[in-house]
Amino acid sequence: MLKFIKGHMETIAGIEIYPIISLLIFFLFFVALFWWVFTAKKDYINEVSSLPLETDKDSAL
Image (cartoon, rainbow, N blue to C red):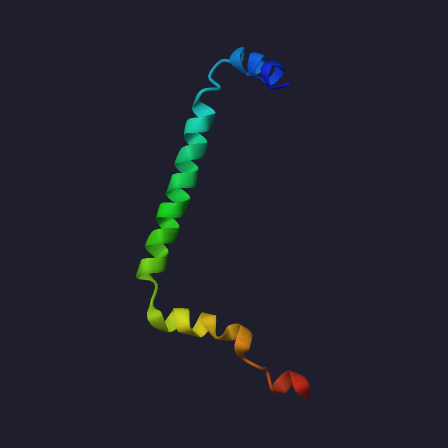
């Protein structure tokens, strides 16, 4: 099955760029995520991390 797919992929002109583009998108996404994690304000991180633990007293009424 893989030989069948590989044979067809080799006949497509310019297909070798797609794995490179995929790798760049993957790499840039995780670099941006890494940058965001280390530059996020501590107050924002603390506020968002406590959201699941908060109870809404108004909704109980």
